[in-house]
Length: 512
Image (tube, rainbow, N blue to C red; front, side, top):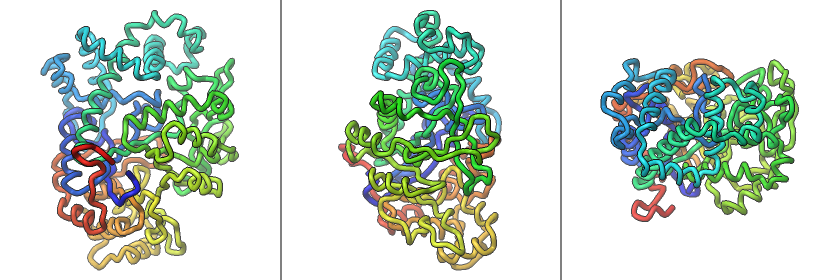
């Protein structure tokens, strides 16, 4: 995997068609897989499956392990005999199918799941218990969610002192038994439904590329239950430094993420147990894992917690190969990992990529500088890279063309052999979108990836995320009609023409 020429489509679960306000693990996911196979694609790339924050971002979650219960298919619960058809209908969303409504989905899905939980029989309870035993993270997460419920949703450092400190709280774990049992049930349902979708994808020759955020949220089960592994004062429960990135392509002030920083010395002393367990979980959830902000393993930008922007910070050494040597000991040298190496670069990142052998990323939009010769331009790409028409953080290609300077737009169109017509025309047969796509497909990169929005020739209004902007992101959704309108013959032709059409797995044996 990743060593042969292949191609993939980027579309998150939340963006899938559904009747429920956000995409779910239902027949629409299976239909999307069928369409990928018809077009000769090898990969389906998704964003993190973790529960989202209040802004809908999957990169700031209350758990690095848990799945987002919004993706649970209500009809799947009905098929299990846990809810009625009328109760499922209460989850049906009457608004626009083009925008995710997380608030509606969260309220309705949680209500439905509680009804299903109280109808669980002994056989299902035994399956949930077995799942908990297999999932070392689940007990802590369920306890965290149970206590958070009892505390009215407040962040853990504002809980009563006996609850804010994990080891004190766990002494009284039985006081939260019923609520914790509910959250264990929810996670069992999530992963049981997902594994059926993933198995269907693999059976049809499609491998799933998942996404792992580098950091975890301050208000998370991971920090609460593993406080010594973070640079947080264990008495005051205050983080003195937080994560971010310096000024870059996306923001002149940098990006002040606010996540707590790992105490890598403490993690090393512990044998990197927490990180290895996290990777193991991710590699069992997906076929391949993209580690977001990989450069932080080489060096990371550490910002004082009281800073107003990310400009004030310093580079601090990460664990480098000391950590990845443990990764290779545990998962083998060919562990299916993609390094997201975008943003501020440095020799230490280049060296770490070389030492690990992981494929890095290229994004053609970053190469469209009329006065430069960027490594992101297809003629500079090497086989051991994943080449993107655009990621979830980029504008759509059509949106970029409209917003680019005349000089950069002209360079991009000339570079990609745009052969006339109106470059501003969008749609499924957009000539400008196709010429950019084909430039990526022709590159030496083993894997080429396109977002569904660019397959459709959509403009900037279909963008998934604008980094540094907290509101109105992560809401893009599509419809089955849109997916079925994509030009199957065109994508099947370029996948075959540029030798990217092969199944990720042998359909009979699932051998890579």
